[in-house]
Length: 461
Image (cartoon, rainbow, N blue to C red; front, side, top):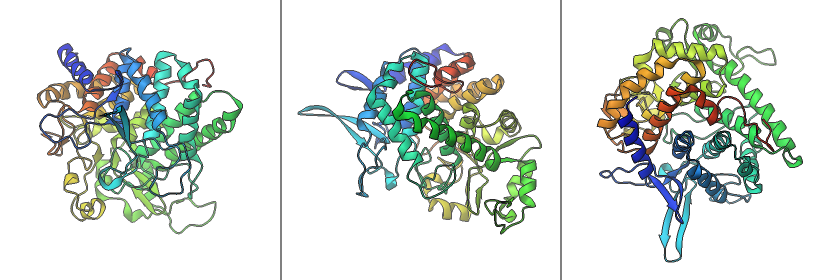
């Protein structure tokens, strides 16, 4: 391990800290001194989750506790019939501390200020996961047992489990409502959100206090998590055997005995997949819904599925085999590719709306994101594939320092710094630190809540 790189990363991460009334409450998204900040000077919920893991593994939990409680204060607590107001239980995508004559105040963004006005479906899920990691790392169950925190947990669960039209265990979301926050054809039931949902349900079960008020929530969480795991493992999984079954599917089947339950037409199997999928590897499809399967590979959902236990042991092993067999495509020179393959031509026009930032092999459309190193490390810690994360870190380390911790990289192999990538991107820095710690000590994965449950007084687990 390069100690000088780690020390430099820690200095940059500490320099990104946002303070409220003197106390740390989060980290800004980036500290690029050249490119206009836009909203990169705010504390993003999903971005700070990675910073939170870094601080927890380093034994510095104060900033994490402050962030968790600040999010509780910002959560919407009233039912709304006004379509322009955030729904009950929603947590903000980001917030910023603003100084004024009356002192400091916190201004939250629930998507109403975001580019394209996308809602933050994943914010509450990340908050639950950070809370779970905090309790596991510190043993501070008292914070989780506080009345306002228990109410916040129930608020997130109400938002995820109750009001719905569909009858699947997966979570229905609009396009661009999570890390992929631009139009990419990932509306419906994307694997990234389903893996987050599973991890959040695991966290909620461990964190809900064993009191009468929570009994129905605990029962609902357990049932939904089990149904979700079965659904993802059964219907999203793609290996050569499953593709052969889809290739021979009958269609227009009706009733309980239908084999092709989502009416997927065999003609939708893309030509690239047939030759690209190795004999012994596999992965979870990008999306699945009525009459639709998105065969694209998405890194965050697959890696998180392995790290969280959503993937079965056999599926986890097969996925790691896929990473080895297709390393050039999925890992690249600066790890890791967010999605594969990139949309191009008419597909790019139709699914991205001709988004120039998401042109082929850039940004969300096949770009490489170093932040995903922490998830690769988490997956490797779960499966014991230490050599994969070590080689990925070695190939990334010098580039990350030279390129000032860039946000993302472009090109099929990730050799070019992204055209609009920010420098000193905080979650790139934090992702490296978490990955290094997990690579050095895979047992640390349990401190982040990804193996086992929090077994603290007053919480179920």
